Image 1 (cartoon, rainbow, N blue to C red):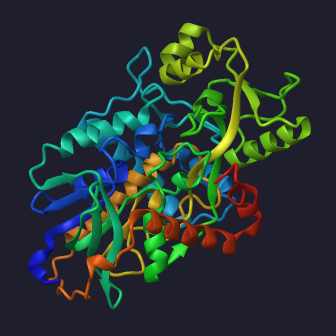
Image 2 (spheres, rainbow, N blue to C red):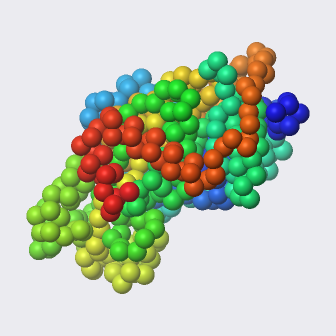
Length: 443
């Protein structure tokens, strides 16, 4: 293709969730930014984040917060990433508040901090039970007003354009099957995780790990791809489709788990992987495919105010979570591994960055501490944007030969991408693969 056939921009961001939007907003307003997203702007997993976003309440909490994050991650975290995330949290929260994000407050008007599993202190800010929606909607509203930011929806990244380990852009396909290419000085991957590859997941089905598959094809380094979090409590259903998550914050507010006999069988505020394993053992013991959750210490009205969406979802299934035993089951939830990056989002390929759930800077270790995901996305996407902004050197355009007609059709490509990712997971951890991936009921 001739250079004139390409769309040109300064920065292209793939993904319109919290990480992609915040990166766009943190870039200078003199930078032309093109944000592409696979579906519509609001169909991203950031919108689904219920629990909240962590913040360092005061300096005295640093060591406790640091240890809680490291312990939940089985001490496989990158300590430097954890330090950066925690130290940056107050500044990021202040920025969100300045932008108009509303967090719940108590009767005195102070932040209403809550607690979730594996946290020893209340340090989580929330907006009812739809914190992700509040943050994402606010960022999106502001980004739409920025003249330097352009959004393109229903557009899927299908390849990297790279030569000699320098990323020059991406190849895309729109909803009508038309292909084209975008060249940019810098490319930011913010495509989320891999939930769409699983039958039971809290993720949107179109979140299929495209960045990971393309990284495998182009030799971009990945890290800990087998570190995939299974959330312990999703609303049990025999229907196909995305699983409705019952946030860990419900357990943080006093909900308990019960087995088939109505017996409490675990400490609900342990790390997610520990609670998930306890549930799996209990299901095996009784030969069931679910356990139960109930919130006996709240009235229906209190639950409706604190957890309006969760309360309504349970009621739609015929359960009052404050009075009834609501069936729940584990489901794929979050990717701790991903495209390997440093603390500024840089990957092993020049001018290619990764942020949010797509990236792995080691902050989560083997298991993510509850409500660290939104914070991580915000902190490290800002750092990536700042690094890009500081780079004033000219980038030579050196494009490889690209034949758009050579790309396979969508169904073939999706099958190839899934196999690449699943084979990588299997090679890293056969036990996890056999338990959660190599089963017709799982993926």
